[in-house]
Amino acid sequence: MKRSVLSLSRATGRITSGVRVLPSFLIVGAQRCGTTSLYRALAQHPLLLKPVLHKGVHYFDVGYARGLHWYQAHFPLRMSAGLVEHRYGSRALAFESSPYYLFHPLAGERIAADLPGVRLIVLVRDPVERACSAHAHELARGYETESLLERAIELESERLAGAEEALRESPFSVHHSHRHHAYVARGRYADQLDRLEALVGRERILVLDSHRFFAEPETAYDRVLAFLGVPHLGYPRFERHNGRPLPRPVPRVLARKLRDHFEPYDARLVRWLDGEPSWRR
Image (cartoon, rainbow, N blue to C red; front, side):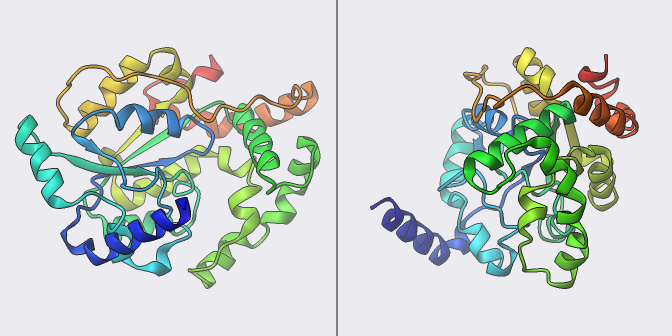
């Protein structure tokens, strides 16, 4: 029944896509860094309009072949947005959250081309913790077959070899390991941010330290509203979503090795976070 309802909703959305809004901002990553928690907090603001069906549309990474009309079908009607704007006296902004956008080699180019002026929000966390969390997440979902994080990381270079080239050569393809097995590569946030900056400009990217977001959500929320130019209408209910306990502690030797590996990448985050990342203090 649920599939039937979703199918009907998508069909209706495609028919009416021309009278629907496109997003004004996107939460683009990083995976396992609190994107769902931020998304649900922002979705409580009456002027921030979430997708009609689900949080992440994944158009600019794995769904681009479907076309812009398919993408636009996921968002509210312009009439609905207009009613909200009339009620609150300010512009309503549609948005979505797809954390693979940050890492996918073509997503940034597609976003810049199709959504000129869009603003992008990125959350980053301790990349060692992120790698561990991602491995537990992929293992639980059945996308990972290696139960030991150490072994999965050993295999990462081999699994991802040539992945970006393959995605560029076949733009509408999906590379399983690039999407599900990039435990270390996704934690090199600075490389991904530099790629985005070249495409959309520094002023249209907001980077949040997810550790600080969870410790002081009101402060992070205020920064997001200021970045978007949206009036403050009170604080939402802040909750953690999609948290997943690690199956076992990270071996000390592996943790040290990863922390050393990430050190130069973390240092390059200073200009994005206006200070050292919280996990380096």
